[in-house]
Image (cartoon, rainbow, N blue to C red; front, top):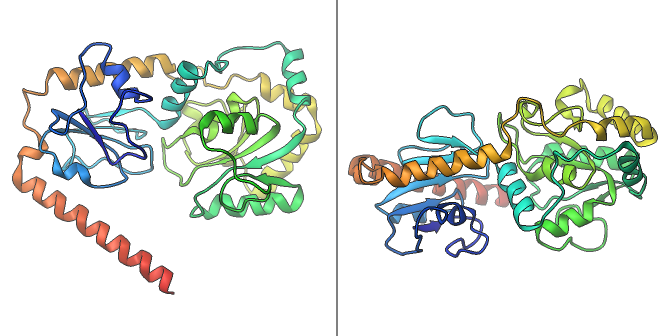
Length: 320
């Protein structure tokens, strides 16, 4: 197999979750002449490969089945070629497997929860490097005018240094804060990333905006859900109340992080494993998208046209 168009080089066993899953059953090799190519949304190198294609997206974008045979995204998509496996689940499994964090399902005594809460010496933080989401930038500025919010990302940094890269470093940083502004880049049903997960792992209270259906998986009693308030002023008013009321904070911290009906992450991992095995076992029995020359050509033209138009818009915006 081969991995292209991802956020980093995944053509190696280290840190490659898909490799780890498939290696449980198969002998897996990385190859420039693959039987299966995994690709993501950060490029178009996948167009070079005429083999079975699996699209994986951590971003808010839909799978295009004129370019891929199967897709793994956060979407609530009932197509049998698609599996819902949101980014938060990938992060959570990574934290559990590689960093041995305390599982969110662990129930701690009230005394321990309150002790940890009182040890948090700082109010709220904001960690963003992508400046494009006006929703979270505007909310940060509004809250920061009321009470200091530490911004540790590359965008709007106000702490004097950039937070070191790496997920575990981020977790260590936010652990000292009561609240974390946990806004997604964009809003879409099902689109839930690590933004809500990491504050929960650090014992913080997330202020969440993004997935309007977040309550299908995460318990809204455990975090401040933007969608539960009529106005931002009402949300901020509640936030400031929790900041001053340890009993109210404790009530939120005691609430389970997940809803009672959510799919356990272990089940999600098993579903992903079975999905991949089914793909591998049936790969010689289906007509691949890449084998349909007309569809492949139309797809490639559309992708390259969209890329060209996006570049024109970008340069036009810079020029203005």
